[in-house]
Image 1: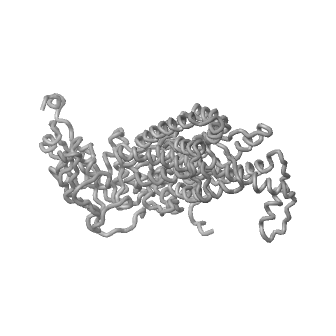
Image 2: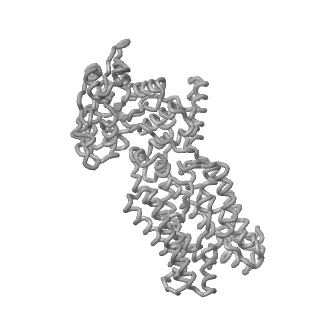
Length: 365
Length: 269
């Protein structure tokens, strides 16, 4: 042993201190591993749940059939194959992408606004998207272009207009998180009012269609929605992942952040734009899904760590697993009928959130 | 683990110099043309009454305020977060942040654009905590620390920045007398072992005289006196600047600044 000459007690003390330090960094490989395992379990449960029961072995064989060189033959019938690949898997993947996106956007907003009640819809994204969707659905505006259907495109544009308007208002007021938040509240109120008025003008059938979109649902037409959402998840998700440490630095306030070498205004702007784009993209394909972006980061914070280095990536995993899990219920709880997943997430999320608040009384830092 | 050598060698010459630094808020000038040189390894104390411009001067050095004039390092470049570390007067201690995570914030200026802390960043945090005998606190939450412990942790964060220049903004104003001395002794210790240069705004005149090599007395944004503590800690000068009668008495070879007497102090000036 090279270190045999060192006193062993000193070595041991050093080791203990070091492991305490490592532990204190809050980085938990175990947590990520459990997160991935839960996500995989939810995915499997989702694949086998539904009226057309698919056998687990058949699903695995069918997936392995895609992998080259293994020579595994799918044991599913053609009809089962198309249920798996054209209905269940796209919906599962969309649920994961939307859930992960909303949770990461929520965590980022909570960090940027230093407010535990911040959620991805804070800057009027939901009201803006809703208004856009109502206009498109109800008044037959044709915003569809190339692969973009009218409703997602209109919702996306509406969300962007609301966020940009919130930020424009706040910039006049100095771009502090508090002014930005107020700008968001103002825009959300304005667009909600416009949306309500527009719905009132619609006939009953169209109004019902609009409302069911607003409640949030993970309806898929093959893999199309996923291809629409994926570029935003890739670009904005990467940006937010890179900025997760900035969110920790922002917690000590702008002055100290600046003296530590961070440009707080630029960081905040980057994070807000990325999180808003991600939310707008998610909303455009799935409507408004409540509580995922609010509750999931809190669960991670309570269970694992208060550091955004950990909260951001683990929220992605936990949000994906949460929404995919709740969506199983949305698909299967009522036979032959579907519950809007946004209503279920609120049903599951609201009591849980009350519990979180009651247990922790986590106040604004 | 080495307790010294946290800093790399640097060229001689002043560690930091300010020339004609002026700061105005609206049309009121708060700092009116301050020149100073901070030598390598020197402890330069800034004293002066509340509102004299001490904090503002420090804030302009780390770029938290707009100012006219120049602030430069020894090599003539403008200081950044890897050159000058600030220990603020009232540091923010976020809820739920561990001591190790807090000290890790000091590495912000050293992280690459992917913003991932490397093993060496963690190693530096670990050795800084070891150096300040805070290893046992590593997984405590900063918001649960006592005032003295918290101030040590803030010093640790500044140390993790690996800056040759340390700025202290009245670092001990919230501490009891015992912790005041221990924090200042810690900084003095680090100055000698790590070769830091220290620029400190200090409200405790006796402590300023004890720890600083040189003192600068500021009043209304202007330097009114500078030199060795024995020259600047002059009863008449201080009484005039602070607007209250003060006496300076040598006790055990150190200068102690005291109010002249209670009765005189209460008289209207």
